[in-house]
Amino acid sequence: MAFEAGAFKPVEVIMHPVPKGTAPEGADQLVYSEAPIALTDDDRTFIQRRLRHSLGGYARPVVEDESIDSEVPNIVRELLEKSENLVEHSCTIARALYSQQKPISPGGLIMTVIGQVGNRRCVVIAKMEHQVRQ
Image (tube, rainbow, N blue to C red):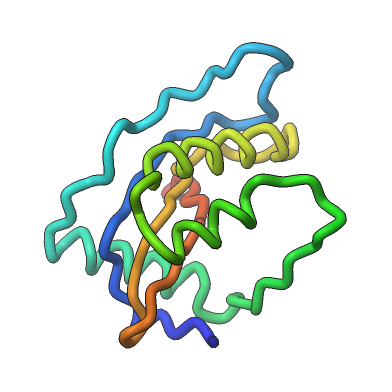
């Protein structure tokens, strides 16, 4: 299914701040959100606009690389079925991103979004980096 940002409707969103750089060895230093955010119409519009801007010309089909040892594909498959473990799964996704990002990576918010495109459920995982105005 092609991603059509204009047809995308966010239903559940949880965000976790991710610091810049690579996670240090050992202790988990992330501060996790404990619940999805309560979405207002303005929040939905903002998220749709940001995703449309960020992904509009860059969205590509996702092909799983089964040679990579990661929990994330199974998490996405489960989230496509139900949101029961959204908080726990989004924490795992944020931790995985932070442990794999490069030392020069900027900080930002990792969003796990359960949404709808038409009548189909979808999952969007995106890192929204802080914008610096010049």
